[in-house]
Length: 443
Image (cartoon, rainbow, N blue to C red):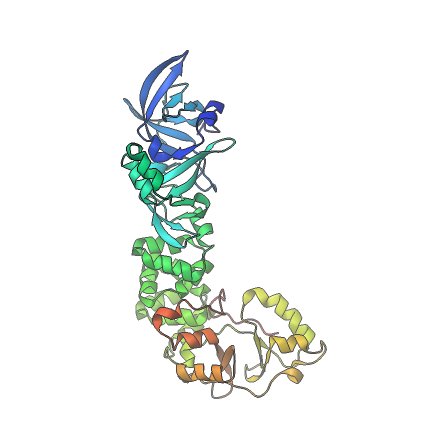
């Protein structure tokens, strides 16, 4: 909007900080040659770039006899101590469309937001404005009782307000939950700020929201962060989100989940929905998830993930380390390396520690442990957990009767299977960001 580049020096001198509610309804006057003419009252404040860390106020919406009109901030000569707004010319511009501007009162008051620092869902009762070197900006959200009282006529109970502790959240820790109206300008800060939360915290916040808001929050995240959050949600919430997200987007997110979690989720869905999601995925991923979903959830087959690093026995230690550096971004679980032949028959295993401490030119078959501890696909979850505990493992391989390596069960998934539901989603996870169903290439 033309003319909204800053705030006049006089305005800066008189207005340092205050709350939006203190300015709403205050008189707006035009001053020329020492004479003042009343033109209306403050109705709202307009922000054109809501994605800024601390968004600049670009205009004031003024209620005039002719309706609502905009006064660009460079037409404001003063915001006086009694909050009277002084202009050097009458406001004449029409309101900006919803997709071009954010209106602080209309679009933010009483709306839910996420307090990223406090990791909770709160409601905006008021907004704090403050002068910077070149503008008046939104600096904080007031979520406390004081904000409500201020809106209800707090100027008449100023003494009481002084005794009420402030509950302010700096605006750079605020993440709006979604587009604030169907045509509203998109607040992309939601994605970047929500991504700062740990998956368990984000999942807890999502669990507190309505189904519509939960879907909007997950929809605002990139696939990787959405997958992390989805893994920490209970099955009922997962199913509801999948329905609300739409088949194509839900499939993209599920592909980013750990393969075992993705298979568990698919197994909870009706066959028709499951097939629709699988049809949107890469064929190889879909085939592997289909196989995993066929196993009972409380068995090693139902718990295993196909995300692991496998290597050939004839490779040298040095070549293996170089390859791991190359494929590192594709997997986080490289505590164990599984040694197989070309038919994927499991021959041995070695830890990352063993690999690093072995001579660089030594062959893998010379340093691997051929005394294998493994489980079968029908091993119960309790027995899998017992095996991992007995041998002090971070993961145990799952093998077919012919010795072929099918997958691994990590310690976190084994624990998940034997502890109460309310605790399992809060536990740390070893495997994340693994593109469901994609094995890491052999070394």
